[in-house]
Image (cartoon, rainbow, N blue to C red; front, side):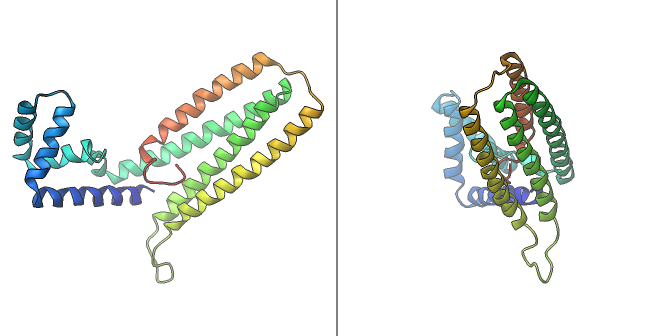
Length: 220
């Protein structure tokens, strides 16, 4: 969820801030090594690291980005992060739902088990997206006297359900594939290629939408 990811980032950056205050010389040496890895000479790297350490916030940002792989700027606007998450889920679910319908239509028309199987797989992706969306919303709810940890475990339960759903889909595909082996049927190859190419574009685009949230949610 947006909140749990934000808290994780803040915790890691907090640890880095404490290390900067307690071990400034070691942290300066780490920054120098980062610049050396970028191609600067040892002397230039040390001089630049000393300049960076003169500004504690700049030093923290540098270590967060280069050592931890975090973007401190992403913590500045939780509302924009929440809006981005909502938009990503909405676009991802809509694109994959439309593609499922297209694959089923063209799969039956082309007599292609591959397209029909992928349609079932993509349908499970749509359900997974909706479950993850709902779990992300639930995880934002405040703890209560009965649910003292809030609803953050909803994301884990959604991930478990998604895994089970994939197993069921795979089982159905295996059964149909065995039947096709017993009774082979001609397939419209060109249709399969074109629809599959469209699927690569849609799945790639959907994956890019969720790259920002991949570290903070099991479903993503």
